[in-house]
Amino acid sequence: MNRQQLRDAWLQSLFPDTAFSVTTASADASFRSYFRVAIGARTLIVMDAPPQHENCRPFIQVAQLFLQAGVHVPQVLAQNLEQGFLLLTDLGDTTYLQALNSDPKNTARQLYSAATDALIKIQGASRTDELPHYDEAMLLREMHLFPDWYIAKHLQVTLDDKQRTALEAVFQHIVQNNLAQPHVYVHRDYHSRNLMVITPPLSNSPPQAGERTNEKSNFLISPGILDFQDAVFGPITYDLVSLFKDAYISWDEAEILDWLIRYWEKARAAGVPIHTDFAEFYRDYEWMGVQRHLKVLGIFARLYHRDGKEGYLKNLPLVMKYLRDACERYEDLKPLLKLLDTLENKQTVMGFSV
Image (cartoon, rainbow, N blue to C red; front, side):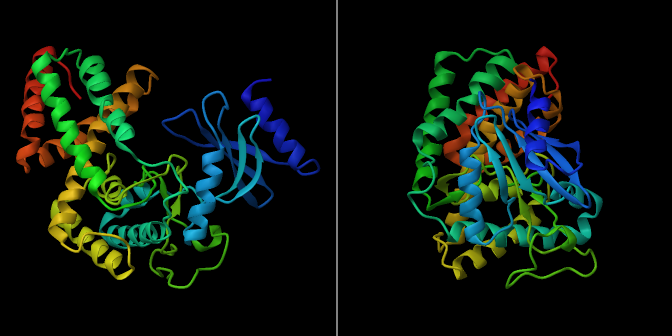
């Protein structure tokens, strides 16, 4: 049987006497797909994660950790690990990205405040022995996606020995900063496509203590959090980079700085391990961003060239802008900026537009 037949047969075994319909909910950058199952007036979500490519167990583990932290995540109602299916509660179909694009003036501050509140809950619940460590090997492996996929495959440029040596030296500087930061639970893709606006009818439980409902827009001030199966124990600024240096939407730096200060104040008050000097915290945030931007440029190039997902190419310029802006601010990152300048010139000559 194909994946659709396996999925429907499994659902039929769960609801033998109930009619249901299945529609596509979403797909992500991995091999996972999501489907919305309508059963009467109720909707649920099926995650389809082919076991030869994906492992559902980390999703189940992280969902439990984040649920214990007091944030909204899909609850696992049923599982078929052999075939790679999970049945989940439905957190709705309105992402932060959709809400922000439709009404940025009235929603941005509230949605980002809610997102940092939830992030602080996750960070505050962190324990060192629950999740894989975001160690040097993983950080470097991610950054090497940039020369391997963005430079070599996408730009079709071969670095000479001097350029490669300079790039490796910058990678080491970045990793040293990343590893020196306080470590907490890290979602790894905490951005506008993976945060959901939950309206009260879709919430699986009444508002918890400290949560508020915005009467004007009628959304619950606490995001639904998705796509957390790759969570690790790592640098505290990583998820903030994902959130505020989002590949899919951008904001003025002054606005981001205000949101970061508010997060920093709330995190300190909550006892989250964080630099007491905001300037040091902000530098860590910038350097963590450089690591993530290098990784994302490589991933988006790989998604296009290996997986045929052309849609990610349009997001490359914004990610490159984030990367260049950070490199311009710090002397130790100037060799990387010099390489980016060289690549940009070659890119223009070759006629690439990314």
